[in-house]
Amino acid sequence: MLAFAGWGTLVSPAQAAAPATPASSCRTGDHGILQDLQKKQTAKGEDPLTLTTVDFLSADTGRAAGNGFVIGTSDGGCHFQEIYQGQWSFQQIEFPDNVYGWALASVKGGQAKYLIRTTDGGSTWKRLSQSPATFERIEFVDGTTGFAYNRTSAYYTKDGGSTWTRIPTPANTRGADFTTRSSGWAVVVAQGSGYQIMRTTDGGASWKQQKKVAYPNPLYAQVYANASQVYTVLYGGSGMSQTSYSLYGSSDAGGSWTRIIAQATAGGGPAPGSGAAEQEKGPASGSPGNMQVIGKTTAFLVGYQPAAQMVGTGMTQNNGRTWSNSKTVLGFEGVISFTDPNQGWLAVRNMNSSTLYATKDGGASWKAKFAFEF
Image (cartoon, rainbow, N blue to C red; front, side, top):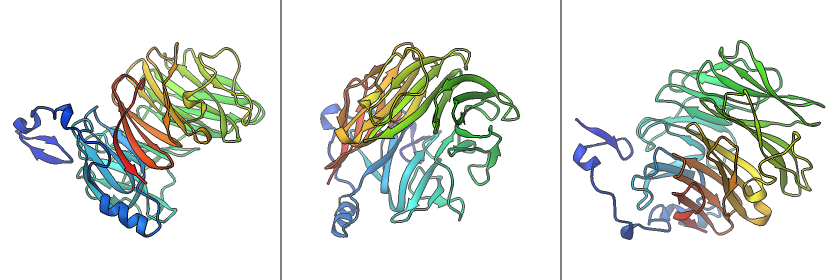
């Protein structure tokens, strides 16, 4: 019997069980790939190759992508291979397994964003619609079932993204997330009042308020859930390259909530809500990026402060009762992909390079595994 490995390639069980590459033979830098493409970009005066999205299935196996390329590793970053080179500039990749994948991407040089799909691990991609996608985020459970979100709406597919059904969400929704077709969350804004965190257990047919957070000028939110764990980033104001926000979390499906981060800034004003928070500053004391919810108790958030050229992560291992922010790395922005409470990946861009880091201690320390130098 054959097992899947690599990028959709069949290998024998003996090959799949081959010993890991010794650490001493691990490569660094650009691993000798995509150098010709980088030279062409530079010669044409185009943007250099930059890592914009990352998605890992395990600590060893995953992919990263950017403007015109996808790369991957199956040995924890000791070696990377070129998977794709072509017209697509990737904004988000999503691989529920090692064969089927989806992405939000634009044609290089264009503004329109499309939903595209691969059935061979990322080597080739097919546009699923001739019309641009309105989605801002996608999430797939398996090779056929997935969800998609924009700021006001949620959608569901059961045929691999060929067709989508809009899931009913409350009026004035500004962020949503579903863990199953029937169970989901939405954050509603009420001008002059604040944010309302809502829950549905019947696929959006009805919604119940779980938490109300006061704020005079609510803008938008992000929601991240896994089983009974749910977190929401509630945005305050922004100014002088600073963003104010609060992170609220619940370990019991909204029965009780913890104000985990309440970051007020001079440029953005107060953070939404009131009362004590576990932390007055989020990762890198900057704007919040994407979040990952792992298992029953753990969650990670990336943050970045472009003016100070800092990117960092924060984490909880006990449903938000305590929160710790990591040391920062040099960069303007970042995106994370964690596979368990300890092991994860971070893609970062700075003035002179774009780097992919790995951690084995929950983000307490990061080690560069791949980098494009500009």
